[in-house]
Image (cartoon, rainbow over all chains, first blue to last red; front, side, top):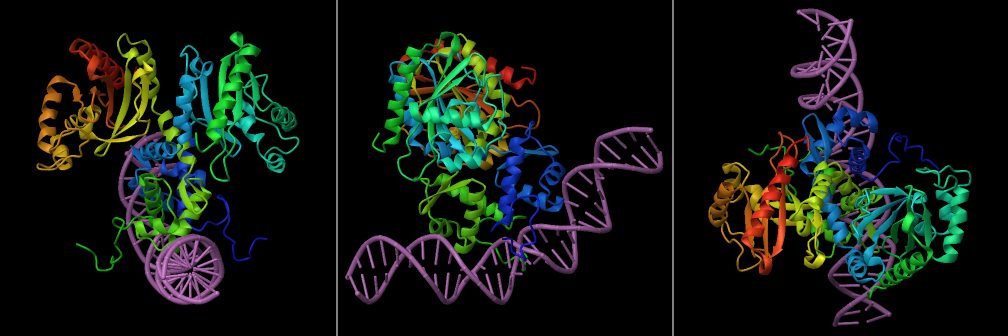
Length: 264
Length: 264
DNA sequence: AATCGGTGTTCAATCTACTGAACAATACCC
DNA sequence: GGGTATTGTTCAGTAGATTGAACACCGATT
């Protein structure tokens, strides 16, 4: 498999056609994942296994591009990333339509609704509509969440092919947990996926936050391109009823159908 | 000046310590600036003056890092950028505090308030609080705006040193315009800046959108690091009154003061 | 059909960006 | 205060990324 000439392979994945770019991306990711969001040259060099001198060069170039900023001794993500992220979102017509629909929907207009996107084995929240600010979520746009811990995540993986699911969650795999109700094993997740496929929506019962339930549906992908999107409603378990849930699922599905059709 | 050995210098700025990174950043920017958000390899190669084969390598590396996505024949910005942008914003405690304050402020809680950041000669909107969804702004988080066209922009440049302002807006410079009321020359802008410095807030009278007025104040920068932030309220000219404006400015200033103090 | 303008991909030679060790400059601690 | 362990920067040699021409491909035109 491995070519005998390609001896260079350590730390970062296999050789890239433009290693400097791959490494620069790794720098950005390291900064994003760092708790404080600030790392020094040496930190990065050590963590990523890149020689100091090379790291220095990368940082200089990244700073010039405003993708990172110098803050005294250490480095942090730069403002240009906000711009680029926003540029990405502004191209997603679905987000605009999402807002419009939520505002005029009979039931959803009063709820907290979110639109999310599958990204590997995580979910990214793209936009949030807040009907009644009484139940304000602490999560923000752009936040990541493991798929097994939220209804949107489960709704989205349920759409994947079985062999992809198997690759992502092999039998016996332990899942990250946040509450006592969180799914703990890949088997549990796959059992739920079967149910989700039958019902056409996913349910989350205090699996990420105690006292909170979620409903989610996938947006049918219209064609090959584009990421898979999902919609979710969040409600307090205390005030949640099955009848209300049925209404919300109905509206979520309607919105999903309309988002799936390029015509709107 | 130019070293005889450094003959390579065309298209992109001077030589960089890691050219591949600089070029990759240029690719991202080109995609963000492109109206459709989608460009082909040849498009990028031509536009940026990078050989096709090199561009291909860059794109492959960027794709592997999920910073861009392949969409059939052409390329678009990738989801990782949303993540990175969000990571940047999540580190700005100011945004969290901004939301909290708006919710409980007597006057502002009913208005459309935004927090923005100076980025060169533009302003980037970081977050938006919407008190009454009746007047929903079309602008999104992350959007850019020339400083001369919005109140926050003017409030933020007013904080800069005179020589920086002079460098950014030399006498005789023509400014971009969007309505009949937009400032047209650097002189007009500098005259307003003098007023803004006296009053401590900036006013915008239908300069970017007909029928809409804005008020803005700068957030005092607490120390050397960190970007300069600004706050603005948007109102309909039809329903705007000077008394209401005075109240809003008072609350904006209070919020700005609290954001400026690291203690909250 | 056959041509043409366009796309993206391949490959070996060259020029250059990366490396690593030695350097200076700072913070730390006994 | 001197020693120690950091930090980031410098520099010349080499490993290797970049290059451009030639390639194969597709979809329009004529």
